[in-house]
Amino acid sequence: MSLDSTQENPFEINPDDLARLEVIREALLDPSPRRIGRLDQWGLADTYEVYAEIATYTEFSIAMSDGTMLDASLSIPRNLAPGQVCPAVVLPAPLISIGHRAYLGMIPHWALGGYAVLAYSQRGLARSTGEIHVAGPQDVADATEVINALVQIDGVDPDRIGFFGSSYGAGTSLLAAAKDPRVKAVAGTSAWGDLFASLYENGTRHLAAFEALVKLFNEDRCSEEFRGIIEKIRSNTIDDEVREFARVRSPKHYLDAYNDASTPILLTTAWHETIFSVPAVVDLFTNLTGPKSLLVQVGDHGNGELPGLVGLLSKPTAMAYRWMDHHLGGSAGDGAQPQYGVRSEYMHNLLSDLRHDSWESYVLPPRRFHLTDAAAGERDGQLSEGGPQPGWTRSVKATGQSTEAVVAPKLVQTGLAERMGLPHVYKTAEIDRGLAAIWTAAPLEQAMCVQGNLDMRVTVKPQQADATIVAYLMDCDPATGKATIITHAPYTFTDEQVDRATTVSFPLQPAHYVVPKGHQLQLIIDTDDPFFTYANTTTPVFPLELSSPQGAESYIDIPLHPLG
Image (cartoon, rainbow, N blue to C red; front, top):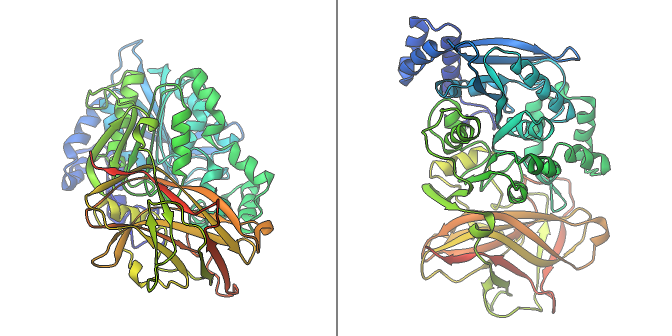
């Protein structure tokens, strides 16, 4: 399964996969030989013949107490004996135009494992009525009403209910579990931990992701409250109302509820996630005290679980089946026990599969690389493990236009290409040094691994309010001058910092990346990236001075270590 790179919407499933899901849906609704036979072209006919013998599938609407109708589907085991009950899994929809139908390919797996499955589209999404509240209190109340409807169905065990969701569905699942004790286990793929951190990182709005999500929500279907928040974020009015809107929609706010109930929680994310904050997901995972598991994969938002949603193999969905089997007593998975702690891939090896008991044991200690001035006749500075290097100043221009260095040329799609072994290549040798400052380390004498948390410190003197810098750590091949991205982070300065040299320290996104022998680590700092700023050709050109004053020398901490 893949996303459609030709679509303007970065989250849309490609037409071939949409067609397959529609054929699956028709076979579920009418399990006749003709309908099921159409699935032969994908080798799925046998699976759905078996499904038709063991379960039934229906589509219907669930009425909420305020009259809102949630579009839903139900798969229920056939021929349960009198008094026999089965576990149930609830699937709130991801943020996609087909809503809960994105999960159609998972239904046979759950059914073969003996589960009842109730999938639904949240209010305002897809065919559900009502307005979109972005996993707010109304959506959480809806989830409780969905559970109320589920437990009225003959054969459903009210004491064995789990929630699985991808993206928007992951957030809905986590928030529902915080409020309703009947949710006994959660698996959230491409989840978020802190909505505010996902919108606003180091004082910087994630505008590209924000606008893509707003477009997908469709503003006309959004609640009045949400439309007000949209306008505030667009105007950069990040006030208490915006913070409170995000807070009540952030699973990290409900840690006490998860920990008091010891709710088993599985989370997945991606190293180059462009929609939700990876550090916030790691922080949520770290602070959970009950049964927990974290998977971090190569790629971007939703890439890892996409094949699994249409019934193919994927690590996130395989882990979800095991997770629910263990905690709810089903048998949808392969019979293996779930893995607790941290499981990860390193960039860009999809076959890598590393296990650690905790995030603390996973991350490697940092090594400090100081930013030095450019040597005589050189245009770039160095990343040096020698002593601090004070006294230099570099100036870059903010022009409102980005350089070659960007977080990702395309939301979601660039990460999907990474998972296919095609990471975006940056021609860093061609970057205009008037628009960006670059520091490069010595070529590596052996392959090395960047594994864990990264932090940097730099002093900046902005000449205009809301000036932004973006730091990118690259893996550069000196033979070609081309590079691939390891990690990044932005930082935006306040009005009070204009025309003042301000020393700032901030984290970059965590990373797990193998740098080949002979390659060089390369740090780029520039001022414009369409991921964080609106395109603006009318912004006046102004300089930013980067420096390394005595006592506050500039550096980047990188967890760089030999392989193994």
